[in-house]
Image (tube, rainbow, N blue to C red; front, top):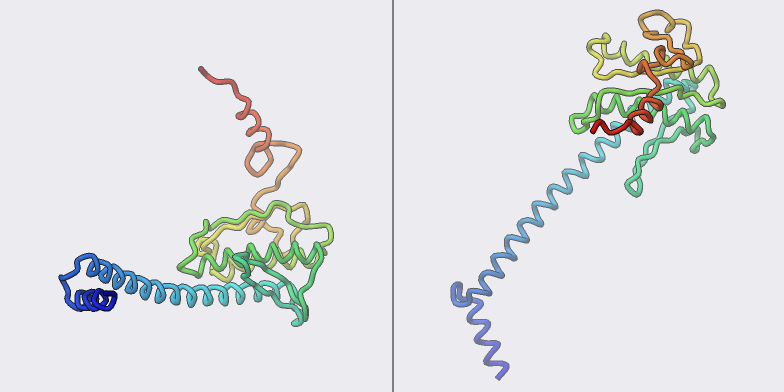
Length: 217
């Protein structure tokens, strides 16, 4: 009868070694439960670490924004929603506009470089290049403050040799007067002459030539 079968199965389950398949299932279940508990602990550690990184990044970006917009009413906000990292400049509420968005992107790049230099979990290359990043709507005053902020990072780390990253900005807009000497201006470029460009050649032309180069065979 069903009652008899249930009794027999219950007795077997209470006697280790009597029912090999059941014993194996119980062992796998125990192992799985242990793995789940370990993963829960690891997930909790990662969430704590992630939150700490977000707070650090927000602090760096906020300082960068207030360094360029020092009136005291502006701030920077970093958010992470739907796996997307977003940087925004706020003035009570989030600001918008092409110039503001451009400035936010530029400051975000610098903030990421600084974050990379102080975080043990970040392993980005210590190199940043902004190629003529000024938008027409970005005022000269703000643009020069941005350049000054970038230069101040070197002083913050003590000297060029102790700065953990290299930042290059190419621009047709003159930098602030204090940043026009050889300490800061390393190279004068000329887009009309390939030999006077940043990489001593026209990269687009060189790449196209290699793309269409005949097979040596």
